[in-house]
Length: 219
Image (cartoon, rainbow, N blue to C red; front, side):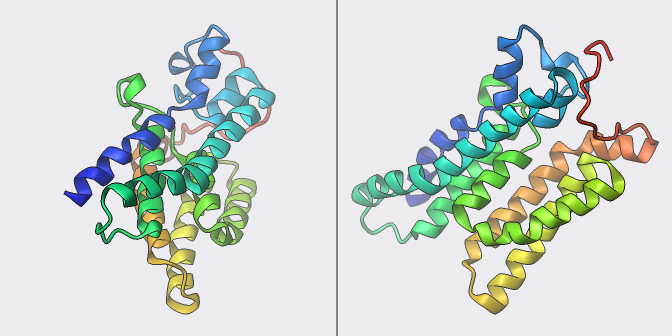
C-alpha cells in the first residue's frame, strides 16, 4: 500500500517533466518533431531555432527539475508522512522517486503520446537537487567528450556513466546516500533508450556534430 501511495504522489513530477522544447517550438509555430533530429530537447531546439532558444530550453528543463526535486518533494513528503505515518519510506528515497519520475516524465510525456526529450537536462536539475557534488564528475566528463568528439550524444552518455561511477565511489568511500546511485543508474538506462537512434546513427556515421549555429529548418 505504501508503494501505491508513493506512485500516486510521483504522478505530479511525472507530469511536470513535460519537455519545454515541445511547448517553446509550438509557440514559435513549428512542429519540432518534424525538424532536425525530431527531438524536443535543447540540442535540437538550438539546431533549429538558434542558440538563444536552445539555452532557454535547457534552463527551463534544469530549473523546473531542480525546484521539483529540491523543494516540491519536501512539501509532498510532509503530506505523504502525515497520511501514512508508518510508511518506512525515507525522505531520501522519496526524493529519489520524485527525481526518477520527472526524468521519466520528460522522456515519456503523457501529454505527447508518451514521447519526449532525452532526459539529460532534467536529470542535471534533479542531481543538483539531490547531490550536486556528483556534477563535479559529470560536467568535466561532458565537456571533455563534447570537445574531443563534437557529438552531443557521446558527451551526454559519457557524463551519465561518469555520474553512475562517481556516485558509487562516493557511496562506498564518502557515505553518499545510496538513493543517488539508484537514481543515476536508472537515468543511465533511460538515456540509453532515448539515445538509441543516436547510437544507430553513430554506428552508421550519420550522426550530426554539435554546433551553436542555427540550421535551416528544412534540413
